[in-house]
Length: 240
Image: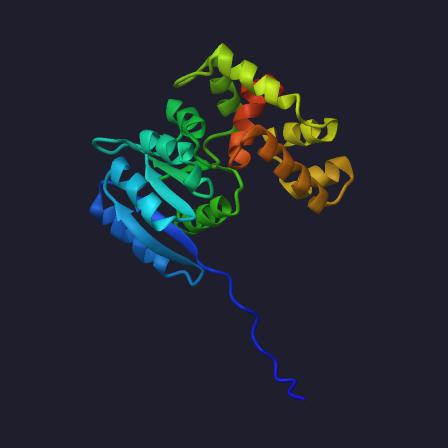
């Protein structure tokens, strides 16, 4: 009998779409991303409208999206991607030179998984792509959760309406007590391992609760869970 060992099949590379109006910056990102064995650039766009069309055509795992672009900007393009059921598995990481302003909340409300400053180190950028591809919330160190919570509470950017809050509150009613508890910890920025330690359960159990909460609330990733938790009033902001 042949007992020759075979290598396990390698995971498919993370497919990345680059959207930025600066060709030089796109080229730098492409070289960086394509240098990684577990990633590949599948398209480049110079504005939001082109990014949306390319997303539909190439079905990337992650879009690195500049917020400020001529014509259709990154926020509008992110809303278009988030509203398209066929692109439910596409995660958007917003790139901005202004990390702490109204764009933070606007980006999350638009459906972004998080954001990153354009001055981030190469390793930070690559980690951001992997984190977003895994469906995790990506919040740069400069944008603390306390700041985001404050913006949400004060209606920063295109603030939540009473109807939004009411809609979220209605959907929260579908959650079990444990799912609501897990949601509170997600909004506090804890990882699955951190939540598991707090609740004295396994990380796999926490992951199951998170996935169920996402399905019931119509959230595409953890970043959206954070927004819903605050906008529904389940979690209240506190001064940092």
